[in-house]
Image (tube, rainbow, N blue to C red):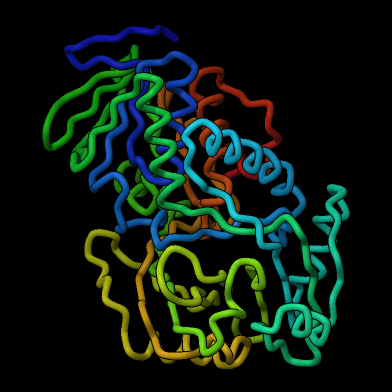
Length: 381
């Protein structure tokens, strides 16, 4: 790949979508000496996609499968490198708890993933969990796994840090500029936005829920899902500080959720996860939470975290992009010679953004990566 710097608009790589993964990709490409242009349709950062709301979980315990553990190990390394480089505090270690009712798979899945990768963990009963972490009130029949290295990322600060580091390496990031169309030219790509025209040797699409607009052939691998984040005032705030409240993933037969200690903004933050996913048009989604959604979330908190279930402080919607099999989609876009895509991060991809940025930079510059991504490769589709 050439390393040209052209004031008339030619770049080595154009990255479309500068959210969590796009900002990391722009940084990893720029630090390799490439002339990088990042184009984002909203502000940098913004609250329209998947990379806002103060916190995102990071955990070595991966109930999604053993293949995720080596990726998250590298993500931890890269987040800490970024912290050192920028001086921003990005990663907070609280420990993580996975808990489930009998008959749910989450605890067994976590154990298998940890054991397959040599990750130490501690099995806990519901009573042991509640005694150690009094903000929790798990039902007596639940079982749990505690892993000491889990925690959370300050997601907006992570995105800012990647953009700052990309800037320091010479990248240009253009916010409030929407891509209208793009095409391959035989020796690269041409991109037209609502503000200009650009050419490049390579194109990277990290557009989250907008991937299906830019690459319709991958429409089923980036399905836009509307999700809700909730913050409640704890009745006993001292139980929900990071030193006493690990991040969590909980599954029951008919509901589940994930959550965090208090950080950055007032309130105990959590979200619900379930099968009733609302598919939306990302440009026409109603961002206003409903009273019914609030009540559903409050019931979850009242059941599992009653000391956290005080008055509602904040409700915010979030857009996620889900792949068909819930694994990531990374690789060369089918039928294209100069287009790499990162998509389908399925609501849990932010923790991996530092390493998926590195992987997408590998795939763009070398056509391959040393990371094991067979379960996430676009070739599986």
